[in-house]
Length: 271
Image 1: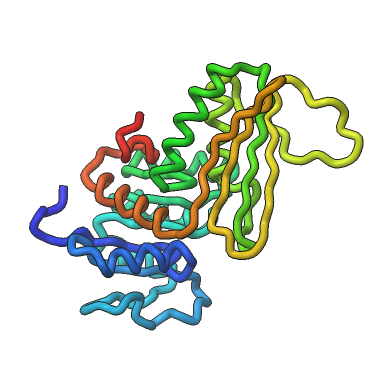
Image 2: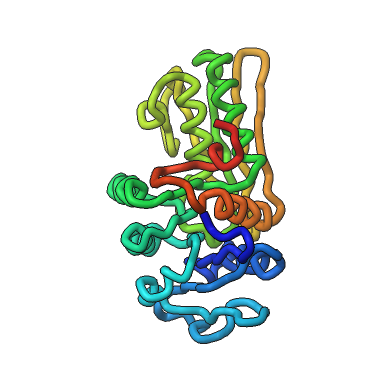
């Protein structure tokens, strides 16, 4: 555990992105936290500039300096993309530094690499770090178990025009919750697109619809459609601060934990 008399030292990976900026702003305002490193892509024009307005603030560093700077951190928060996130996990596992990551879009090999890193250090991976969405995940599993396959399920999500992966990691997590409630793997039930003459909907299918546009932070809805009634469980995020707050809550929680893979349910005590 860290010394309770000093500030928790935060490293921010993916520091120039929307989420990185939101996290750094909250770190600057927190009395118990300090930013000690802020990493960006090698060609980022912010390199060398102060990452936050505060005394002894770190400058933006290229990701190539991870190995040098990571040992000065108690924990690293990551909101980036799969390839750089996996490089961070490799460096962090060697350095013994825990990682909180909200990066999405990992393929099977990436998820295996994430699991390998979690055998060396504590890794908290969550596609969405808001308290509300994690409560929704728990509700969906219970609803799917109670309603059964007689209710058709559709997962609808919308994000800003700049988001690069689809469906969102949160939408997939919602689908996974429904699938768990039905006792089946999501891969056996998911339908990601419908075009042309698709035929009647198969029983038990979990459909996904993806919308992109404007500056939408994140809207997610899950519809259970039965004969004569429809149930909708949803969550709408109006500001990124809720995700940044969740990431810092996870960062405070994970320091001193044993190696392993954790989720926001662990952080929030919902498991």
